[in-house]
Figure 1 (tube, rainbow, N blue to C red):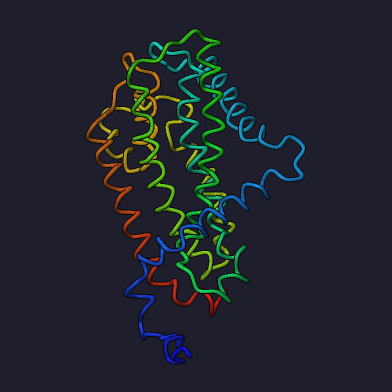
Figure 2: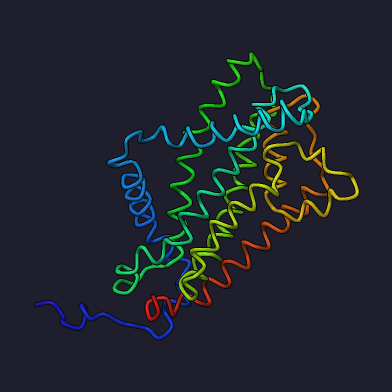
Length: 277
């Protein structure tokens, strides 16, 4: 007969604090499940399905190309203006989608959070993964544009994953802040769309950062997405596309700072999610 004490469950005080990051790895399959579930929900019972991930950035690209390229006649260097805009739309659309989806992710999964223990970081991160899938779908359009304009990329294009990783870190950092704040202050769900809309206009999506006067470039780089977008353009456009390194390093440093602060704030408020959600 087996020893009955061998089947006892030992609950240690503060175990979740000491083993949180190990638990995050142990629950990695939950991240896959939530991400896959959200992907299926997003495209299920939609009229145009996956095409919606392409239509939005393409329509925005067309509008910005007409306004800034044809009417305002902003410079685009050696690249077609449409590709200049689309190279910026890729990381921006990824970032904007991640913020929109993750900000309400904890509220959407309230039943699970209030009943089952798991590292809550998984929930907003799964929303970011869904936006990453949209990015990969939209990226395929870039190849079509290059064929259409007979634009041949240089070797720099192989560095795109590095700048995508930077966009991923920025998305996770902001998502952790907004998702945690939305639990405590429900009116943040009205603020997020404004942040996304405002960010589109203050980021160099429809124009090149080179049009910003030199004395303002460093200040302009306080927007973390400036470094990400400039990096994408440097990698995709090649030629005379350059990175303003002081601004890029500033944007990268701010991205890492926001990520660190987001993790700290999320972990600080995570313990009360189940009580107030």
